[in-house]
Length: 243
Image 1: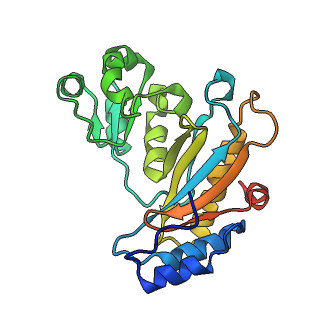
Image 2: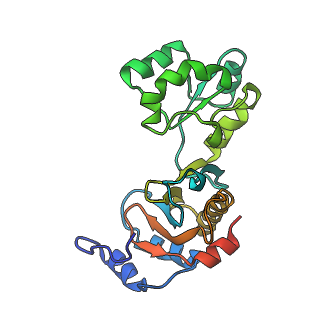
């Protein structure tokens, strides 16, 4: 997350926007979004990425951060959902937009072939016993349903859970270094949409702060795009505006 990326092979527009970034300065969100949009010169719709360095020590169980947030403007990427359900919940899942139903045949396919052509897996408690054996495949991909992330729900709530994913629910969790990385939208989004998504995520992470983390939660917050430079944000202003 450096603000001094290599300029070799970069276009004039990118080089100029990088020169406009003051090293050592912590920007407000609106300025950072505008600078990153100016730096974008690739032919695809880049993703805005939020990188947060926390004061948490991942080695301690009481300092783990993992939760979800529903972005008000979505991520800009359609999510493919599989629903591991049975009985009356099957029809409800289909009506709510599930792309796949995790029946016995599908479960066997995942187990034997390692098939994981989906972004999110949602399950009801009565099916968890059947898919426990998929932990080796789904767990490695971060796809195993988990009550903590709202992906294990009661049958009557399966529709709402699928709708949230389709509307832009994102999961965030710390890596081994205590950092959190979240995609919060596309360069094609309006600036206000990116900002609102950002404030929503930071607010959700702040609310998920465990009691084991003392003092300030964040060491630094950076905003970047897929191919763009990284810009340091002013932590205080971000937290004050968080939703």
